[in-house]
Image (cartoon, rainbow, N blue to C red; front, side, top):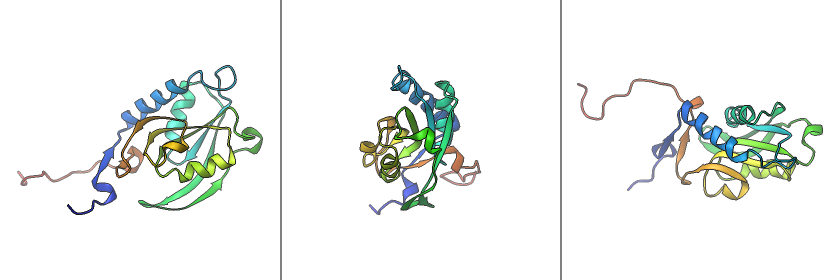
Length: 167
């Protein structure tokens, strides 16, 4: 069998699914913060972590939300990890009481960079691949390393030819 391209073993996530899975992540995190179970803030890793972070912060009634902008993907391949924008330093400290949220941990390189900056933060993702699992504290769904996840913000609806014939 020929090697597959990254998109050929795809896991398609709908808006409904990311919403359900992000709510499940919030429920799993509820009551587990260091301040009598509460969390001080949510920090989304942009861009993929923004939708899950918004849902988690809503579900857990966390009003302080910030972002850390990290670039590691160039189209469908990973490159060097670069922090483009950091959250408020006074808010972050060493990360104690902060939920850092992303959509997916793949190789773990992005989370490794962010964890070095905020070692006491709690790192949570909706989806996790095996190589990245050691870098995340909480996740909802594990997927194989060779699966490419198609998130709804990366997709558009379009006509697809039938598998057999044109009728």
